[in-house]
Image (cartoon, rainbow, N blue to C red):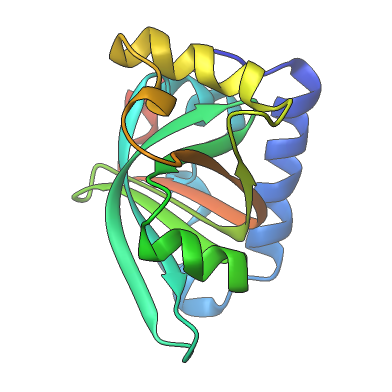
Length: 168
């Protein structure tokens, strides 16, 4: 886990704000007894978790792609090549969403804005070593113009049919 106590508290507060503004349909499914807390989420999200990463193109049409997600300091990070359409989309409109799901076992959804982090960005010094450790090489070595995108969340929720199976 990379999260500090303050980051875990911030994540729990984000969950609370999200549920406070959620519609009745969501709260009818993601009932309090099925919600994961921040400790459970950060423990579960160690290593790589595949996410459906969504952007919008210049016409406002949704685009989604499966990407590897790595959770660092309470934020999902993903990477992409410099010529990817999703990168163009994010440069024009940073709004994005990511969802990690495993059937009815667990679901974690985040909506927010992506911060694009290139090789020379100071934040890369924190993110790149984690990815290198997981994959055995740096994403910056995987192709031309590779960048990270860190999702700065505006809302986030986490669901498990059996939260007791997700230790803190």
